[in-house]
Image 1 (tube, helix red, strand yellow):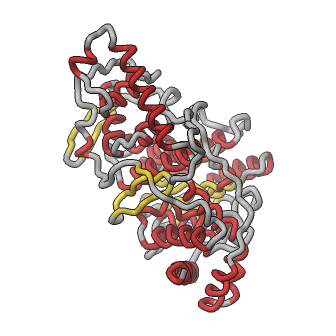
Image 2: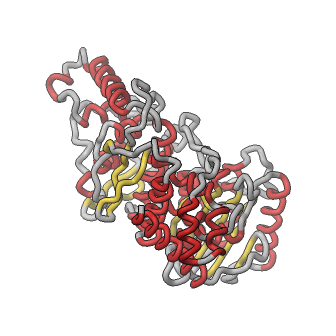
Image 3: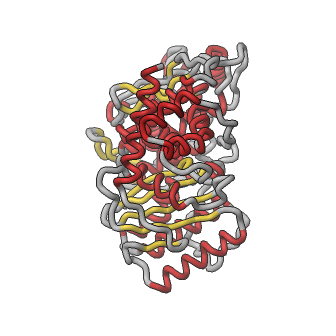
Amino acid sequence: MKNGYRVIILLVGLCAWNAFAIEFPQLQARVNDYAGVLSTDQQQDLENLLKGFNESTPNQIFVAIQKRIPDGVTLEEYVNELFDRWQPGNKEQDTGVLLAIFIDDRKLRIEVGYGLEASLTDAASKLIINNDIAPRFKRGDYYSGIRQGVESIIRALAPNYSIPGASAQSGHIQQPSSQVRSTTPYTPPIPQHDMLLWGMLVIGGIFTLVILGKHKSMVSAYRGLEAVRWDQIDWTPPKIVLSNFHKPGKICQELDSIEAGFYLQLPIKRILSAMLDAMVLEGYLNVVDEAPLRVEILRKPDLEPLSEYEQLFYASLADDGELSQEELEAFMNFAVKNIQTKAWDADIEATKAYYAQLIENYVDERERHAQLYTELAKKHNDEDWYYWYYNSHSAYQQYYAYDRDPFRYEIAIPIDTDHLVQGSVSTTVIPDLNACHDACHSACHSACHSACHSACHSACHSACVSGGGGSSGGGGASGGW
């Protein structure tokens, strides 16, 4: 219990220091060009576009253009806090989006409020950055990049909205209908009198009011711990841990093939290698070098039949031919969110057995007459999963017959972690301090280690820093040019 208090006190103090040490610009309009890269006419055109959208829908988009990210803070930390201060969109429903651009750093981020995450997913935001914004920024055409990016954001949020003067070149982000997305609402606040007392003793009444106003965010940050949580391992990209809480015998049948691979405990490196192998075989990519991994784009795939995992994976490679730490984190965080939403109360062993049997039946049925199975394959190995993943894919035209190693690229994947494992998260102590301790523990990791920032910063950071009742960024994506 005392350790929990110390974590909370340390976190609140750290958040307080960051809040006052960094200067944030004042909101002047929907388009805020502090770097001076837009002409008056260009800025007015974008302002009119965003004003019309704001007046026609409950959603609101702000654009911030600055020279540099302030020292001592990461891109994600700064944009999340700027989002909290500017509070775009409906404050109750959290329906705002912030497009933040840093010219000298050549970095940008789309921050999305919780109320819009179902429409503007992390994968969609990444594709907008890579397909619409970054290519134009590389040419120095900031106005066109912002305009195209904003148009694609609007299309993702309101597909039927008519955009005045919309360009035919604007990218369209496909959202596979089979993908289940999380729109988890805030849950009622949990009283934490002891925590408030300690917080008041340390930093005074002002932060006590902040914590009171943000209990909902604390509970929201904890809700994922019931289902899927990060288990930190030497501050490398972490394992995904499924909790022991489940309904006995309940099977989650909604997982797609990538999620099933995680669930069956395939190492993350192998799953990523399999996706790369598939895109190489289909002629989308060519591996130029394996140490470090570097690819070249041969042709752009049709994104519609690809899952959001494959869209995100392709977009991560398409921008510069490499997988960055940030891009790998975005992929893993996205997997956590979806598995958490679909299988939070499923019986782990029963669900694993279901997918193992599904794969075995698929392999047996298709190889019974070809005599390839008995000669080249071994039951219950990782190649069986790949056989099912690749040969059942509607977009992949080639055929895998255990005739190559789909995991040959795993040594080149710049990630240092293992696979999905089962853990123990008690669900009988939700009203206890353990909930807030775990939430604050994750947030402390966020503040101190940017490697895990995007997984848990948004909810817990806003719980400690921003004022009560305001908006807070829920998700999004970062990129560069």
